Length: 425
Image (cartoon, rainbow, N blue to C red; front, side, top):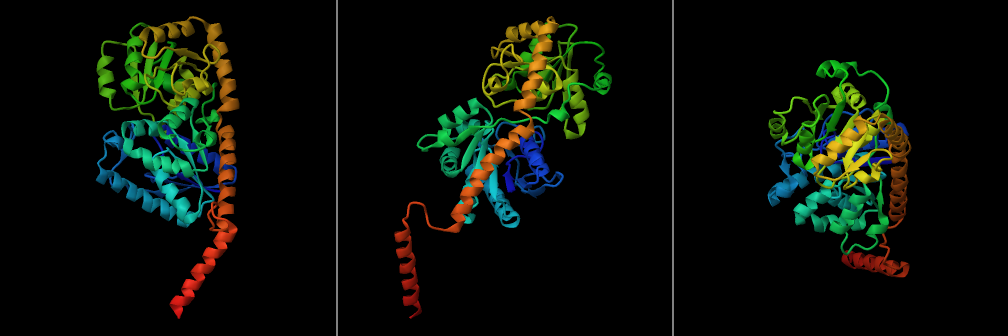
């Protein structure tokens, strides 16, 4: 199959960017042709990139590579139109040149509007994946709802990255859309387990940050208060001999560094890009715990899957899509959101109970291999691509709308033919 992926953000620095890269790579290795339309020029092996030249970068909640990017929810009508025009031109060009069998839209928002147009004009069907932040954007700005609803109505399959994201999508965008719940599936993000082995060297990360033999608690993600980084820092104050590491960038980085000044055991690594993958992988493997103290609902954090693969215990807030992956006291620990004490107690439980920690790590590794490896995720997506492609092939056989009978269609064609003959006379 030929699959065209649509992404409104760069290929790196966001969960949806990672999702697109990893999914596309597995699809390519399995013999499918893949192209990506996105505002990025970085190359991916064996994958065609159609770069979108945006007038400026816009994001839903933030991006580590574009710290001054505008928020979609704050764009003026003119600014949104300029963004959409750039995407429209690039996507139509890609559809004409690449001739895809199916289109996969990432985020249920503005690029689905374009895919809806492509389906009407070129009869190329499309699948949509909601990554959660698109729903947050729709809640903040109602302008995005009507056109998105129309696109979801005509999408063949919709997937959500977690059960919670699916529920929020149906609540926010599902009003008046018949059968939306039936065609909305849960397909979580995945992880390449081989890239995060639970055994291997940690010498580079130990040397770079002088970790020695101390216990390590890691936070990986955007550095903002909604991600609970302030809670992470406050919890660090309770542990004198344990190193707390913040890996990532964000609009509140300086604020969090100020908050951490009184605490001697916190390290900020900054954003470790793909070229720093060895360091990032070793840091996950070196960590005893990966904490995800989010304070607001989100999809499945990629950091949870990476930690489960690399052999760290995940301690995470019991909200959003997190419980889709983390089962309390089975493969990790769920805690009450916004509670420093809950995080402290959970960390103590893991650090001082080696038998429990080993059991959680073992179960987590089994779960991530069987349920969240990219090969398993890709298998499910191919099934949905096939459904969309088969429908598009049927539609291309005839241009007759499904609500018109064969007899009515024949009569209308004959009427048009008669009118053409009259004009010629």
